[in-house]
Image (cartoon, rainbow, N blue to C red; front, side):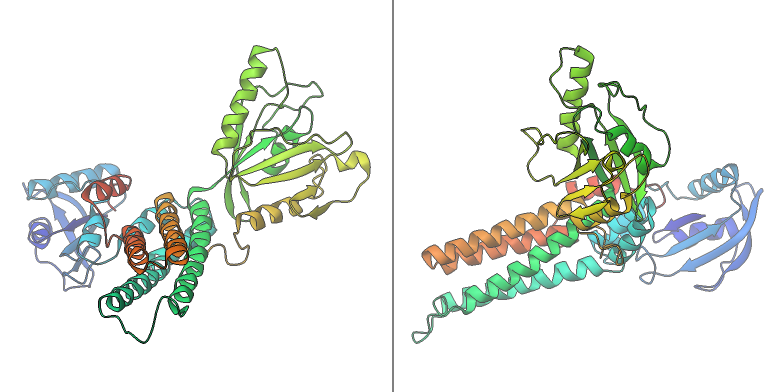
Amino acid sequence: MVRLSGPDSMAIAEQLTGPLPAQRSFGLRRFRSATGEVIDEGLVLCFAGPASFTGEDVVELQAHGSPVVLEMLLSACVAAGARRATPGEFSQRAFLNDRMDLAQAEAVADLIAAASEKAARAARRSLEGEFSGRVNALSEALTSLRVWIEAALDFPDEDVDFLADGEVLGQVQALRERLAALLTAARSGRLLNDGIRVAIIGPPNAGKSSLLNALSRRDSAIVTATPGTTRDVLRETVSIAGLSVTLADTAGLRETRDLIEAEGVRRAHLEMKAADLIFWVVDDSQAHPTPPPGLPEGVPLLRIHNKIDLTDGPARCQDRSVWLSASSGEGLDLLEALVLNELGVDDQAGGEFSARQRHVERLDEALRLIDQGLEELTATGSGELLADDLRHAAEALGEITGAVTADELLGRIFASFCIGK
């Protein structure tokens, strides 16, 4: 399909097809070049702005799927006065013409790039406005409270100390709880969108490579009884309960004079820093070492007791620990359920909406500002400082939907889209 958008799109399409069909009705037409040569025969569909995807006049030329035919059709459009779209330009025009907000526009790209059913459903919910609606509601609530505080400061009621009566404090705390819940959901949405990175670490011969093979259901990693077999990071992307998960099998963590093995240990530490989750694998039949010092802060760690087939122990899950056998597969289902629970991704709902790292950062910034305002209000009773923090928090939320944005940000976002979107 070739899509034309803009004030001249219908006039350009008419040069190729002759008279256009009625709006929102398909018409069978021959597509001709500037010299009158028939390029192909296909369907034409017209949308008059603003009731179109981009908010402008739009014409879709649906030809046969040959890349050569499509390139000839594109060339004919350019010869008639069109130009080739830049990446993401159609979605960008839809945003600029108020057909969707920025988070919804990003959801278009997320839906196209979805690597799992859960990610596709979450992106669809964002495209339909689930995420944006919650962000906008919070932004409006923050703004309303700020306006009320500023009005009370400008026109004080001598009989009521609105900062001392606890009403403002209660409203801010309620908004903080709503924002914290949205941030948690956005983090889960970001994992659905980007996929989950898991670093498998542990001492030599704990069964890390066997666990990778068991979860990927193929012999990706070499498994031997010789310590130090794994030297480099080996990655496999698997599906766990419908989630795209990239597993990284790393070298056994130990002190070594072998330069190659030492490099593998160094890379294992780098992998941990980039991970969303860490599997600390130990041999259940041996003494259980503690995780090494210097683990990255903020990355949750699950302790995996492997080789229960050697200890005759049952597969079980307790807190952040799971007992399993990578060789027999017993207990792998418990590990998968623990991963979903740890990352806050509900197995039934599959995530509320998709989100991106920049969304998480803006929500995190808004939460920090509200916490700062609460601290200032409690310590000094300053309504002015609280109102200013609420204003900046609302601006941070506005950057998510594009209510507050910069051309540079738009350029970076839409440049990541594919041609035609």
